[in-house]
Structure formats: C-alpha cells, structure tokens
Image (cartoon, rainbow, N blue to C red):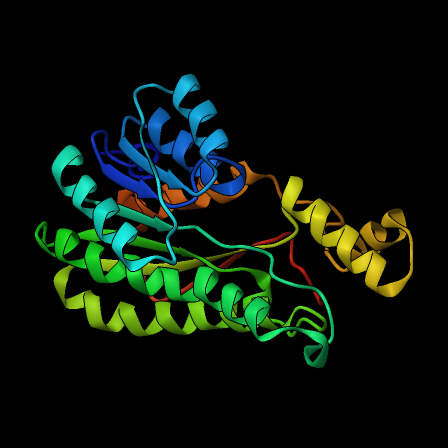
Length: 262
C-alpha cells in the first residue's frame, strides 16, 4: 500500500454519523459514502433527513433524538442489524445553546445544551463500544469545538459541554485503546453554514452591534482570516479513519484556521 492509499479509508467501512442530515454531519456522511463506506445517519430533523434520503437513497437513515436513551438504543440496534456491525462512529450531534450571561440563563436551557451536546455522546458510546470491540478495532470521532479549548463568554453551557467532550475523548482513548479502538476529538472553528450564522446573529444582538460587525470580529480572531468549510472537517474524519491515522488516538485536533480567541 503506497502513501496515497494509506490516507484513504478502506472501502466497506460501516459508519454511523449522528446528526448527519445537514451541516458538518452531512459533509462527513457524504465523504464516507464517496469513499465506499456503508453509512447510517440519524437526525432529529425529519425534513432534512427526508431530503437526504431522497438525494442519497443508498444511505440508511433514522429519526433519532440522541438525548433520549431509548431512541439511541434503537439506533445502535439498527446499526448492528442493518450494517452488520460498526467500524466508525462519528458523534456529531449538538446544538449551539443559549447566548447570554450565566445568571440570565434558565436551568432548562443549560440542561438541554448539556444533554444534547455532551450526555448524548455518552449514550451513543455505551451502545457503540460493544459493536466496535467485536472487531478488535475501530474508530471513534467525537465532534467538539474550538470552544472546547478556549473560554467562551456568553456561551458557557456550550463551552462546558465541548470541554467535556475533550475530557471524555482523552479518557475513553485510554479505556478503549487496549481493544484496538482509537478515540479522537475534532474541534471545528468558524464553520460556514446556517448554525454559525445564527450564532453570530444572536451574539450581535446580545452586544447591540450589527451582524456584519460581529462576523468581522469572529474572522479577525482566526489567523487565516477565513471560515472553515464543512468538507474540511470531513477530510479530517476520513484521515483519522484511514490506515495513515490508525495510530492517532486521545487527541483534540483543531480544524479551525487557528482560532486565537473567542
């Protein structure tokens, strides 16, 4: 196998991507599909999932709220039955959470962010690990954020969850490593798409400035002065699942153009 071949995942990988119907998740799911993987995605957005299924009928889909234990159990049962097992898990589901000072946030807003962004990864992992262990090998990729390495004023629940994902990743890498399973976190930066537009808009409103001013502030804090594309994150996920990435584990890898502060 030459070096170029080593940077590509092998064909036929069985891959689960949570929140895979749009944004980063969709880019990752499509990248694995193009690489010859058998892919299952879930999403809570039925309309987005329906559109994805229409565009990519060879990809398995399931409506799932990953913060619900029963629904997650059913999702992983589907992976076992219809994929025949699991080689790669991409824990991608998450929400932006509320914007505001911590003493202005409701307990419900805080709990929902932690449940969807962090607790959901635990729920998926506890059912996915037995499938990965059955292969005596596997790849886990947890999607965190640059907010998982930098303090993020006015976005404390989100940042707390994303830092938690990094701790989960580094701890699980030690736990699952003896079974041949690599565990890494990808930390995207300012990723082009609807989600960052909503974040910028909410933050601009909270600070009383225009959307354009807020967007300029975000990009001024990125060394490369540009947004990341969803496909950039997908490319890293493919690499970590390839032979060339087989010995990378326990890492928090930023794909962000070097976000300096947020």
